[in-house]
Length: 118
Length: 288
Image (tube, rainbow over the protein chains, first blue to last red):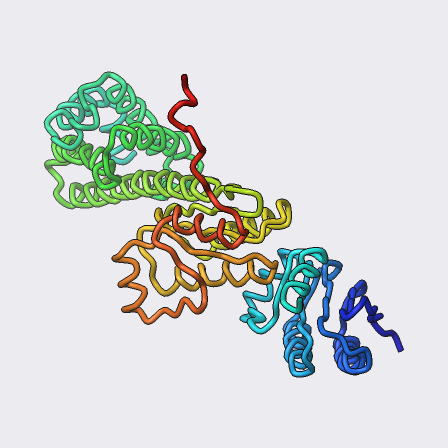
């Protein structure tokens, strides 16, 4: 079964979504990520979706869920690299992802995580 | 041969001079330049075309090919009159002013036979009414074209995204925000955020005349989309009346930070970037 790799960088986890997300893939990512946060004692999660051209309402909600779950496990989630078209679509769908922190690119996302975790 | 046909064929000059006199006495048409030679020429041309149209026996169906020339001339005249500032209804009076002279001549030609007179008047009346409606329609059409062209031009009036500082963008909005404009504004802003890597955007609504629930919704959407891209938005330029409208409408701006002026918002943005503006030492002597 295909999975999205989760890389460990210090106390952060890095997830780069390079393929089109379908529902099962997102569910797998969610369970893998929560497992990995616990096993790696991660303090922050960076999800890069710059390669995603399409995000539907399910994936949008999944991102929100992942952020909430990580927060419960004491890890900050930052979603980075969202395409303008994706941002507009999500807003039109009414999914403003209010609980998720966002950054323009990986670099800024890293800064944000470092600043909030210290 | 109908009476109308005869009148137009034999007494064209008479009709024309009577018509021009009629136009000259009409106040709305005076505004349209009834005394100018251009309109007189066009009147003569129209009368000629009318004669041909009637002769070809196309009856009252003015969409028939026999009336092509008449329609063309009417279109020209309508453009001419609209340019002079006449309303479509006033343009129609141009055609209707032909009624009296034409009716009088038809009447004298058929004075001895009342049934024929009634019949002829009816057909003539109907024909002129149709022509009048046609010229009104053309006039309205040209206005609608102008309006739609202006609309597209307004959309093209770009909503510039201005870079105020490294990492600070400003979006001065002018005019009412509808869905279509919001879409363009949003796209421009997001693209600029990607291009410049800015983390702060100031949306200035000084030039937005009114903020109703819909406009507020559009603003919030823009803010939410920018946030998804990792940029924070500050809304500035909120006038007192707009603040009270927003509250009275019960619009919830959420946790979007708002400032009264663009300068205030810029100050906040600078502070967020840990920058400060300081007065230069010896500023008085720098111009010696």
